Every structure is written in C-alpha cells, then in structure tokens.
Length: 128
Image 1 (cartoon, helix red, strand yellow):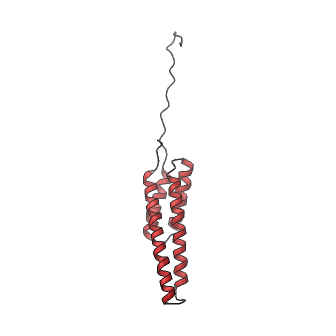
Image 2 (cartoon, one colour):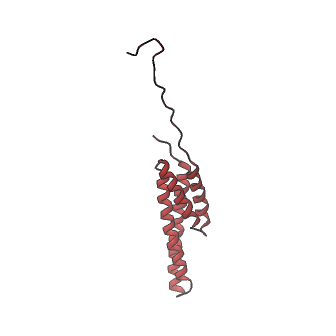
Image 3 (cartoon, rainbow, N blue to C red):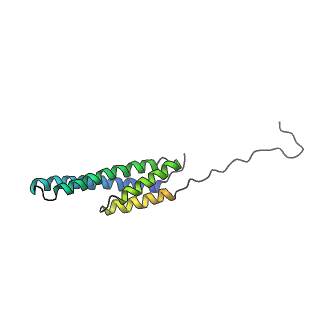
C-alpha cells in the first residue's frame, strides 16, 4: 500500500463537509428571509450560500485527489483545497481547516523506497 497524506486528506474533507453544511444552512436561511422580507437581502444571502456550496464541493474533490497518493494529483488537490478554502471566506472554520489541509498536501513528499542492491558474486567467482 502506498503512502498517502492522511492528515491533509482528513482536514480537507472535514473542511468540505462543514462548508456543505454551512452552505445548506445559508441557503435555507435565505429562502426563509426571502419569504419574510421580500427583496431585503435574500438574493445576496442566496448567492453566498450557493458559492459556499460550490466551493465546498470543489474542496471535497481536491481532498479526494489528495487521497490518491500520486504526487502530481496530491499537489493539484492541495492547490484546489487551498484556493477554494480562501475563497470560502467569511466561513472561517472551513477556511482554516482547508488552509491547513492544503498546505500539508503541498509540502507532502512521498517516502523513497530503498532500492535493492544487485547481488553480484565476489571477485573470482562466477554466477550460476
């Protein structure tokens, strides 16, 4: 089994799930506000909720790329988590967890597997 950046994956996934939950709460709140106060802040809150929802989905996708363990996908996933965590402000919890997860993914390096030295016979002997 290959080594994977588990902490980066878990933090990014938690950030994405929390972002989804916050996005859903904001969408529900905006629909309630739109029915109570027609035209008073409802559309703006709706846009924020939709944006948080989209950003959270992209954070989760980035986290899944991080979990692949392939260095190029881990790097792309880390960048995706990092960028959309920053863009999910003012959702502070998602932002902080995503920032930490994205940075951990960007600094992760797979461990090098030791190579097997070739078995050469000592001088003067022939290989069978």
